[in-house]
Image (cartoon, rainbow, N blue to C red; front, side, top):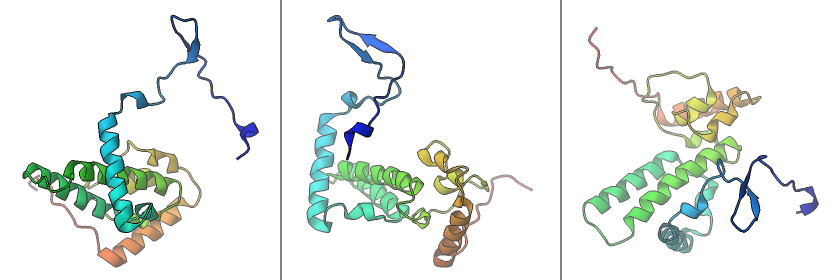
Length: 177
């Protein structure tokens, strides 16, 4: 990688320290210094076990979202039931993180849209591929809006999903007719 192509990003705002040193502000960049080192350690230990069992980065090849949800919920339930035979909390947390990772990889076109195999329980038919893909509107998926060819890809993905899993279940509303 040629570092001469890098740009030093600048918010235009500065924070000054008592020593006189100045630095760009950190708001809007995430606060990595607030992350728990204990949680990160448990994440790393779980990843080590997973790499030994399945191979390094195996999960990054892509898996259906329903599998991550199933595993996260199962591990959380085991923890609530009092099972301490494995680090169920770390496993539940990791599976939720894997879902977030798959969302981002879908936006980037690295994994297929068909991995979002959850039924649409919202009752809302979305034309916005970002909403349709994730079933909520507060993710990086919004960046897909307006990309050429995305509507076609979504249509193909829906056809594949319908062929494999059948039509989406219909929810009955609680309203009386």
